Amino acid sequence: MSWLPTIIKACYFLAALLFILGLKRMSSPRTARGGIVWAGYGMLLAVLATFFLPDMHNRGLIIAAVLIGVSAAWWTGRRVAMTAMPQMVALYNGMGGGAAAAIGAVELIGYARSSGLLHAVPDTSPLRPEAWAVNGLPPALSPTELALGVLGALIGAVSFSGSMIAFAKLQGWMDKRFVFPGQRAVNLLLLAAAVVVGVLLAIGHASPALIAAFFALALAFGLMMTLPIGGADMPVVISLYNAFTGLAVSFEGFVLGNEAMIIAGMVVGAAGTLLTQLMAKAMNRSIGNVLFGSFGAAGGEAQAIEGAQKPVDAADAAVMMAYAERVVIVPGYGLAVAQAQHKVWEFAQLLIKRGVKVKFAIHPVAGRMPGHMNVLLAEAGVPYDLIADMDDINPEFPATDVALVIGANDVVNPVAKTDPASPIYGMPILDVVNAKQVIVIKRGKGTGFAGIENALFYADNTRMLYGDGQAAVGELVNEVKAIDG
Image 1: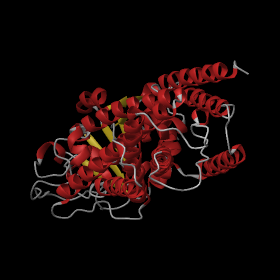
Image 2: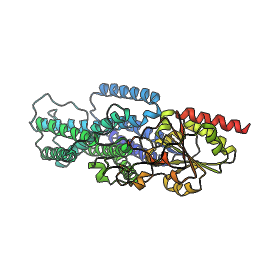
Image 3: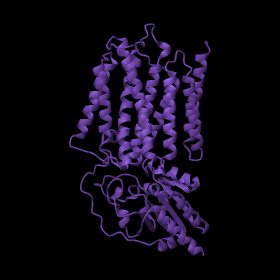
Image 4: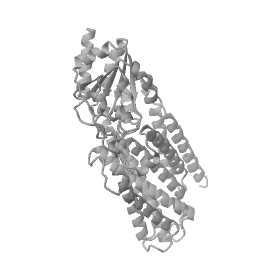
């Protein structure tokens, strides 16, 4: 069937087109859901086409693995709470990087076998069946393929181990930051050692000991690079490792000669890189600081915050907003924890019916991953035209009668502009403090994920409505309904 390879390549091309169109649709909240479906169809087409590659081996094992993976993803995807979505994204992204690293490992082991550096049973990997030699051994990789395979394996291993640490931090299984003297030097030494061993592999010294040392160093670097990163910087970390995974998949696609992997990896890598740049800008950090810096490290003793937090009850807060002209609602991770998005939208609708102009303000890194708050509000049915980003909403805060902050902390902290010793100094924030009145719904008096006090909570125009987010908003709903009669 000489026409079969052409059909397979056509399917790969169509799958790549669906990936690109799907990603394009994901750029807008209105079409994001359809974009995910389009990209999903593209992946399904690419997987099905792969089964028809000439001389494909171990189809039964591949099908079993696919069924296990799909079942696990389906089950966890339906059961995971919105609060756990960031760590699920980190976990799945790490699995993609790990898969790319595993492909690189298989190719390096195959190269060692074909070069006589590893004496074992013939490789029966289905990854490169169309190029098998007559003696049953995989063919020697070209210098370019070998170099790309090593580079993809390095990036994929770093993404895998780093994403696992990010998952553990988001899940609350380990401390938010882990630092020690000389940590940057250790990280650079690990990276340098991994690169040196990788170069040796790329020039043909693919011995089993070097292969093992290479992956051990790459995995260790991913761990050490992520350990010092504070929780407030997790959106940057997740987008960075997303870019890493895409690049790793693309490089391994070149090694395998798989067009679908090449294009999909390049698209994910490019999108992840752009997103990382946007997130880094929103955190006021350079990409170099993202890669090698110790996120959240303060530069000195922070300024003392004067004053006291002033409580308010739900009845008074409801009156303030019911008779306001403009109200801006600022959601944060606490909103997701409380599962309060539906109650918040119900409350906003009551205000809108009374003639109050209501908007939702979203910081680029609010929550634990890029777009976290947008997903929550979309789930509750909030119209897209009521959602404003930071740059658009900040000039409107001085004319805002009441800003309602629900679960947000670090992204509204004024010390980002006033205290050079603060870990978040220089980070663009939502200028909530400039509103005429601020109401903050918060469980207690604890600090945010960055572990620092929030000067907004002590401001003269701020009142604290303590309690669970959903319960507190429910009280506001009842109080406004009581006003309406």
